[in-house]
Amino acid sequence: QVQLVESGGGLVQAGGSLTLSCTFSGRIFSVYDMGWYRQAPGNQRELVATIISNGRSNYVDSVKGRFTISRDYAKNTVYLRMNSLKPEDTAVYYCNAQWGPKNYWGQGTQVTVSS
Image 1: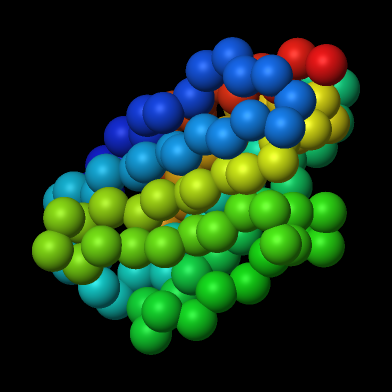
Image 2 (image 1 turned 180 degrees about the vertical axis):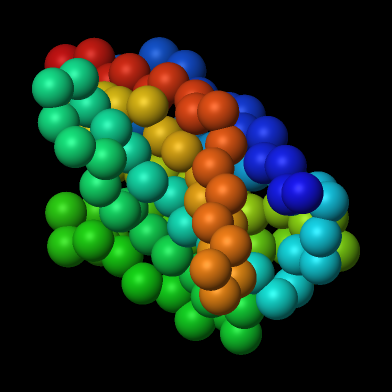
């Protein structure tokens, strides 16, 4: 069973930066595709960024050029570096791990950007 533990959320002013971390345990990290999703109040959960097992990454248009997803295979950890944060980035951010039909979620970490 995969376990995902997120950290790094918090309150930041617009224009500021945060780095989210997600530590993976329970299976072989390197084979899993990893992603960050977010859900704002009243909205559906949306994909923010993904990084697949070979390291290739993809981003939703609204965060391109501001967010960077990365993974450390030695630490079994995936990161989301968020720069130039905007109030509309406020949401609960969730870490996700996928391998075939297997799909796991972390508990979420709150990111609040004040204007």
